[in-house]
Image (cartoon, rainbow, N blue to C red; front, top):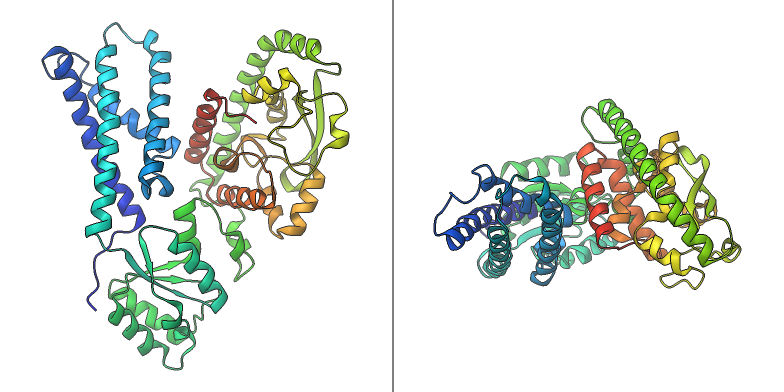
Length: 450
């Protein structure tokens, strides 16, 4: 079978983003033309790139180009709407700081209306065209039977992959004539990608056959790369096989030492700013807490920090007094112990502002995995042997798991949050930190606290 060209998920995202950029630029011209009858004279020329760039940047932050949104028209519409709302909110914040008539409101309104409509239509066309005319990526998975089944089940939920049935190739990597069998199979079935499982047999003959397949244009990808690229999470189910923990410790960031300096300076600046803001709010918030229910204003709790070291984290009290006596393992969506003022403080995340003091002291960071209680850590370490890898970095006020998953309500939530946290441990860098901060602010503006 002749191998059919099929773009990778990353290439599909680039195609989608390229179309977005062209349509957003066109929307500026159309909006200007409809509002004034001329193109290019109504707004400063440098803003021709600023408006489309703003859409692309905010879209990247809020998940417009996340795999789940790229592969689903319904999720694309929701992500685009979220992007639109954030852009409108930002515009009205910065409007008063711009020179008069820099971006007329009429042009801005028309640009956003056309942008949303054009990008929505482009996504419908893109998904229909790729479904009808662009072949799916034909792939095979090398590994033992259980791992192959697990990976195949995961990939079948992705819209752009076609997994060749397990029975056809599951024993290839263990055959006596692996080189000939694998190459023949790849050619016969037009395989675009060979996914290497953690249990794959990579003896000399199989390595040679894989190299030969790569020379012929077949992509060779470790399962970890596939999983991380599609979900931005580390696959907990595959940890413990072939030295996975060794890969996770530390970060893949270039100039890691410089990054750590930048991160600490950012922590110091943001924590000082947070403490100043908290000092301004404190008299009013403290009065509200005292009038609403009896008990102290602050609430301290033991948490587990970097390297497993315990520390005391401080928050504004949002529950009735002595509520910690009945505290369970998981958070509750509608906890009856939360006070009326506490609900408001949690929604706006104001209750966590005192943690800026923990950041200033160096016990926490602005960005990092959520610090958990010792009893929660003990329980989850017994369920997930590599849970302690979260403690390679400082805990944070905002984290990759927090902006993607929210609070833990079950063991399934805990597992997914762990996968997000380990992804951060592995890929932490200043850019990822800024994405997390931006998404946390976006959720804060939408009062998505818990």
